[in-house]
Structures are given as structure tokens and as C-alpha cells.
Image 1 (tube, rainbow, N blue to C red):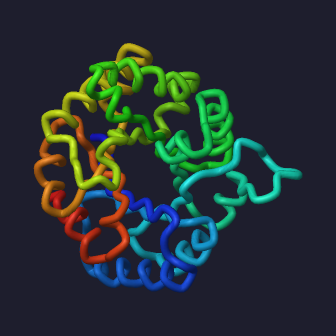
Image 2 (image 1 turned 30 degrees about the vertical axis):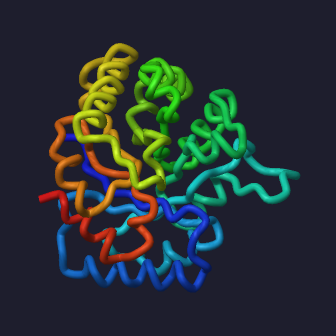
Length: 251
């Protein structure tokens, strides 16, 4: 059985103190409970170590929102995969649409990041998705296939360590959400693509998350789809009560 995962992406929100408080709120909300999914929070770099310490011993996994394509050296402002791993974090978001849009990240760069994240024991949460124009032009499947080409450079053994997140860019922070049928169609297409690249067993074991205005009200319907294995959550991850609603959508 592939893992069910609800992962929060805090983006550029929360000061260090606010991040610690949010992590504490979530830890307290989960105390004594056994969630039906893995719970992950991916925080700004400044908070990763403190949040990892705050949630130690709980069911919450911690990740970073990115890592450098370089191992170490004279790269001012960059944070390496080994630095992320040294905090106790276990996950790293890679290829998020905002990184692609605002920082021009392409497959060549993401292949380097993927390999460094894996070499340092991190689980990449690798994001793919189309913009509004690509959805309307009905080219979204080929766009996503092109983005998946980066992760398809991995061996089957390494690919098995990766989580995929489908994020329709037109639904991120817009209040728009892909319908459960639209999301399922893309998730099924991604899974079929993985089977074609590797094999059916690899595809069946790959967790594919949905990201894009997922919240407590629509999570149950999305998570009921056969190829949706959880969510990569933005705004709704910034309040413990909202995030818990999504976690509890897994019955």
C-alpha cells in the first residue's frame, strides 16, 4: 500500500517564533491521535531546525521548501541538501511552480537538486503542474510529462523514494480548485506514465499528492479518488485547526 500523506508548505510565511508556535499547535492537536496518513510540515529555512526540535517524538515529519543544486561552497544565500538533512528534516519540496516561475528552475537544475536531496537521505516532494493557458489549450498532459522527465532520470530504486505532487498552477492561492474528476484524471495519467517508464508495481507504490486550494471542505472528495494519495497544502497549513481538518479527511 502506498503512503497517504498530508504535507504543509508554509511558503514565505511565519517568523521563527510564529513557526514554533504553529508547530506546537499542530503537535498538541495530534497528541494522542493516530492519523490515517503521514503528516509533514515544510517550513522556511530559518524554521526547519527549530520546528524539527519542537515536534521531535511526535508523528509530524519535517521538510524544507527547497534545497540548492550545489553541494557546498561559495553560493551566498543558498542552503544545501546536507544542511537541510543536518536539522533532522526528512523531506524537501522540489520543482514547486513558484520556484519554476520566479527563479526559472528547469529540468537540468532540478535533476541536480533531486540527486543531492536523495544522496543526503531526504525524500523529495517533486511538483509538476500546468498553468491556466496550458489547461485551456489542452496541452497539460504533455507539459506534465515534460516536467516528469527530470525525475525520470532516476533509477527505479531512487524513483521509489520520491513523492510526486500535482499542482495545477491556476488553482494555487486563487480559490479555484480542480474538480475531483479533473484531479483524478491527471493523477491517473501521471501514474500510467510512471508505469510506462518503470513498471506497474513502481507506479502503484508511488504517492501522488494534490496541491491547489485543497482545504477541509474539499479534501474528503479529493482524497476519495483512487489515484489521489493526499495533499500538498499551502494556505490551509498555516492554522493548525485548518490543517487538522485536512488530515482528518483520511478516515
